[in-house]
Image: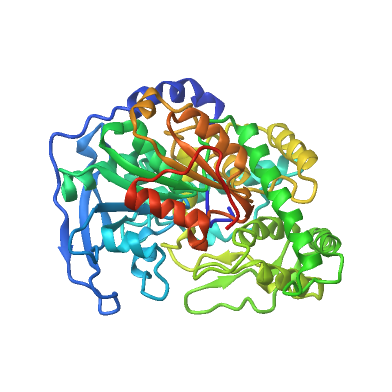
Length: 502
């Protein structure tokens, strides 16, 4: 999971248990839609190509109609291209087209050899970016409702809020809201592959949630895979409590790494102070009385809450831990240290949660996709409190505040069923060619435990470990990125159990 600090009711469990047999039907449709290429935007980089394709809303029922997907392609620079590389940056809700449109000579987002050899293609998933967007009521989204209820009244308020928000999304988005899961995205990718490069197999680079996309595709269409590199491995095979515990402890361990970094690094605004103590102080104070965020004033396109609770601080700090060093899209740990320092001085603006300002706010899609991909079977306050208490014991500073927990709490009452809940990887994955898996040791979002578990389920896969902190490694352009590029360009896999440091 990635970039979103956000994730089956028991009555449906018997029905859902039968769904994998249906949703894993990998037979391609008998028809093939065409990509419709459109004019470039005036702001597009040179050589960029934009297109659209219409795919079935429901692959089992063509009468549901179609949904339009947006595609961006950056052609290879070499005279003899090696092939096409599909890319997904994570999420759910991440926008592949944004990363490709942002690829420049000074900030390529991809290795130069990759850009020389491959046409790089981004398919914006249904509900996201250039594709038909998920739409919801921003006023309902902006209601402040605790995801960590302590009373039955609070639990019922959370469920009612989830149901009302989800119903608004269904009313505004239409039937596609019921068909946003990762299995549908994998089948969409296969249609696009056939439409663009039917005589070529798929090459794929997926980061974070993109690893789930790649693994799902490899399950369904193993014989159509060529080279697949996955960076920041999401494990979609575990039960709810194991998923929550693994991510909560990964967040906790990485937060402690941040505190240690502050103690030894002058770039940390909290250097020379008790960084852990300052963090604990602001979360405790904010839980008793929200800390003001005076910089959060309504702007034309964005806004944030005028004050911040302890629950919101814990959720947002996970997102700010993702990248130790700043990237083109995300701040680094120095920014997080400044945010905590300012909050300790009464200004929590940098830790405030964004507010939705339109019916097409980007965060809606991540929630809607997550509610179809992840189990959320709690039916009572006691169910949620069990999870909270468990996570609080193993992660006493972050208290289980994770993307996993967000799906387990904020999807209760959601109108669209969980059509792609967690399950073991199917036998199709054994037919896929060797693939490269990459994970850092201290990743606050995708645990190294997840990467190890997936490596054991994917025959012939190689897990490369980066002995460092942060979420995904490709953007660092270090040893891990070089290994990914070497595999994609030349087919060279590292030796098993390889560890790199950058």
